[in-house]
Image (tube, rainbow, N blue to C red):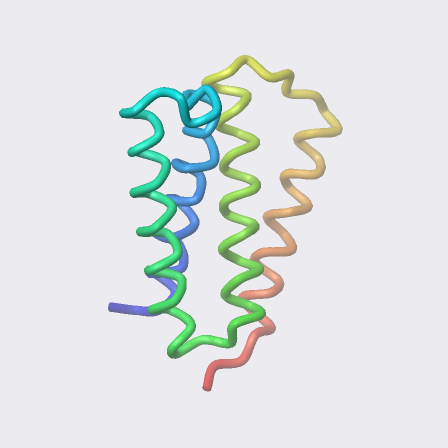
Length: 108
C-alpha cells in the first residue's frame, strides 16, 4: 500500500483516539478507553509502517497535522466547541502547512 495512504489513515485514527479521550472520563469507562487504546496503537503502527519509505520528519508532521486539525473540527462538531473566524483561519493555515510539507518533502 502507498505509504502516504498509510499516513492519512494513521492521521484519521489519531483524530479518533484524540476525540475519544473525552469519552473515557480519565480512562474510567471501559469501552471508550478500549476504543482509544486500539485506535492509538493502530495509528502508531501505521505511521511506523509508513516511515519505512518516507522521511520521518515530513510523515510525522503530516500525521500530527491531520490529527490536530481533525480533532479540532471534531471537537466543534461533537462537543460544541466554538468555531470562530480565527479558528477557521488557523485550521486553513494548518492545512496549507501540511500540503506544503508533503509537496516539499523528499522520498528515499
